[in-house]
Image 1: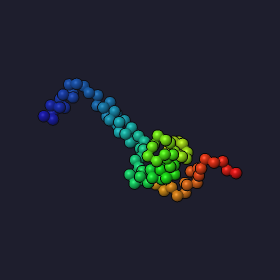
Image 2: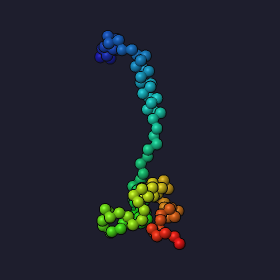
Image 3: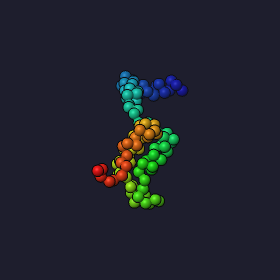
Image 4: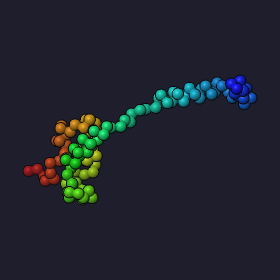
Length: 105
């Protein structure tokens, strides 16, 4: 049975050198692919979500369409990304959040 497979390859005249080269290139490209994306853990996501909700309270409780009392959607996303980068710790980031929208005197 094995000899039948080899005989079949000989009849088709498959270029073995090209096949080896293609398999080698596929292996190299697989190993060279960047693996920079990594998933965050559920605990970090929950902690950061709670921190964002605390730092950017809604204008109207229970109505997400009302928007945030502080900051914009971009500010919230940036805050969440910083939180994820710090593994869910936001103690040192509270200075980044605006205290209120009133001008300082």
